Image 1: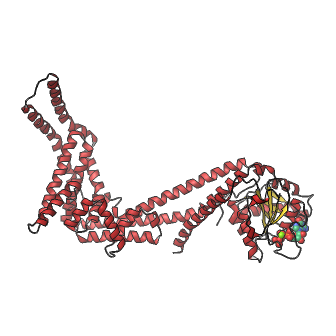
Image 2: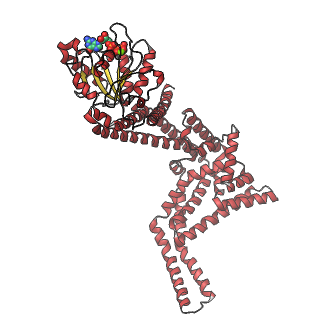
Image 3: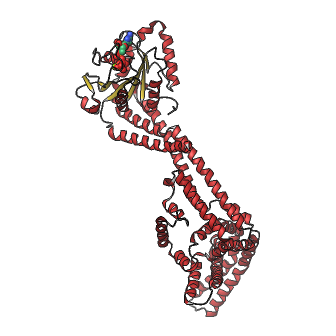
Length: 588
Ligand SMILES: Nc1nc2c(ncn2[C@@H]2O[C@H](COP(=O)(O)OP(=O)(O)OP(=O)(O)O)[C@@H](O)[C@H]2O)c(=O)[nH]1
Ligand SMILES: [Mg+2]
């Protein structure tokens, strides 16, 4: 259950995050040439002191020695003309300091780990709008669990710099402290280097990496590539939406569907196995497969012999329908006659009557089991909340559960009538509601019919059986053409003879095919049917969901790799290879 909820969460997470990425794309005007650089860190690490030092205005953002969670509003250093372009929400109450940083806005934020939760909200709202985040910490903050969690949450979404402030407090062991800092950043998934990680002191700006840091942060080339930065931001949000965790959770769901589909398919095969135990059903099954095979054989053989085979298939359907229609008539009356007429008509249209025979022979257990499998499939999809992936028409048809004569089922039945009137007429007049089972049988047997036809009429046979009739037809046509050119009239007897000869010439090929067909059908074992049922109609909804879900996963994975490729390309173009992102996927 927990796992199920987990994978549902995954889909919801994906959709929420994609929504956020799109909102970001909408709200971010990529042409606004202001780069938002945001300081992020725990309370007391010296964010405000660093902010003031970077813009060269002492106490622009007030600092405090002893009061923590001191900064409670965002302090924004930006030129007066760029200020309106920043578009920060007024409810965050941003405090502006008019400094020209050449198209860059530096923002000091409240802490992210102190007791005041309100501070966290303000900071998150600002970080959400950041193009670049500067993580600020200090030497004795080795394990800032809360802050690290925050970093992890934003890691793949943003581009980063890292500052270890208060270097003056550890100047004697500065190398060791730097290595330790790098190690912790690596643990978080980043690959720090001198271009992005600075050891600095807000109170001693002449030493350590302070001036290098200042140069990197206020690099005007960043402003030139602001559009790329924004594009990278969007890509970051999008690839976050498609994170490993989300994809894995969906893969788990897919696995479940695959398993359940196999289970249902097995159940259907078992139904066939059981039904075909009865000799009557076995016989009917052979007849049906033979009829289907004849129909496919016509298509396979083609040309003159194809026509002959086609005629044979239709004629036998007609014969079978008369047979069944006669059996079905209790007594001769008008309605009975109409029923027989319709059933013959329908058999001609669909070749369904032999199917009706097999269905009757297989008995009610088959019907019950097929319906129960359908109902189970529907329930499974509902339980797994996957009906959204199911085809609407199919999910409607499978909801026709005999146990609940719901309005939905009626609606679907109505729709069915409109789409398939011959079957509906046939059902209403003849057999009352077995259309679904007939359809299942037909679909499941279809495969076997095709296979048999393939076995009976391989392509060389199509050539061989057509040669003699073709020669006769060609000869007759030649004679007719010649007579026509010579302006002679051929006697009617000629045509009679030509047609008779053509029919006779068809005979050897036809007999050969009929003989092969008889042999193939005699060799048909119920096991063959059971094995040939690979895609039973009753499990179509689950199968469709499985196919769509796996397609969805494939697309997600490929989209993610495209996104990552794009981000790598953007990395090359964003100057100073300055900012970094985590090099490996992070835990959510
Ligand atoms: N020695 C030393 N002290 C510093 C340095 N940077 C900041 N401080 C001091 O550290 C204390 C806290 O600095 P703030 O800038 O207020 O820290 P903050 O991160 O803004 O804290 P909050 O606003 O509470 O989140 C102040 O007393 C600063 O003077 C530094 O590089 N070296
Ligand atoms: Mg502060």
